[in-house]
Image (cartoon, rainbow, N blue to C red):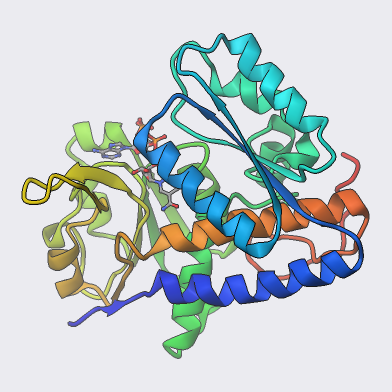
Length: 320
Ligand code: NDP
């Protein structure tokens, strides 16, 4: 089988065009969305992500600000930086970049977020709404994974609802920002969902599980964790992993995913590459959520996000 390579850059370009039109319409109504990032320290993935979303926000004409804090910042100062952004009327949405140094707890920063500006749904209230199927925001990476799957299935002449309801969706990775919400999005599409983690790997069961996947979503942060040996013929394989590796030939950093692309592609019906897969869609989705936050703050009517991507009747998210 020769896999179709799912072109995340093309999907992202389409979403970006739609978003640019939305931002222009909002500007005519006097609303300018604003994105803020909080970056502690200088990790490569955080810096790379910050640069990409900054560029995108500026190109779209959104306000953008980054609170860049030193790696040894006390937790209270990092919480205060979030509070400053909460109070800034130019900021509609806030992204806390990971990783964080050990003295700054994720939970402390997430709790400090104004839930209306928490575009990644990491505040306990938004994470709860997501788990209850009433999301105020759908976090950008899992939303992008399912956008990719929904669109690939439709374009290849398959009925997404039928495929999901017959599929084993296997997730490798269960982090709060990627794996867990991706479980909820799979359940909302009526798939049979299986979640794997380090413990499945250590128990020697990981590859037994991945071999059962009709749809495999890997978000572990471990280069080439899954090879062609570990998947079944005809799988749809989505690679979320972004692993920076130094290239011994050029000395530059090169990005690889969690799938061993060549061997998995030989058996898959479709596969997303790294780079050029989930990442570019995630960048645009973050801005899409920022625009939703700006609409919410301005009281502009907006389609309600849903776990399965199907529009739902309006739900008043300005109040809990
Ligand atoms: P985390 O480190 O927070 O979580 C990793 C998850 O993978 C954990 O649940 C962990 O299990 C599991 N895991 C790690 N190693 C193995 C293994 N050998 N076998 C099975 N499970 C394993 O990472 P994130 O979820 O934040 O990110 C995952 C990857 O996705 C990273 O490479 C990150 O850079 C990338 N990423 C990409 C994005 C994009 O837009 N493309 C956006 C966000 C992240 P346990 O829970 O037991 O520890």
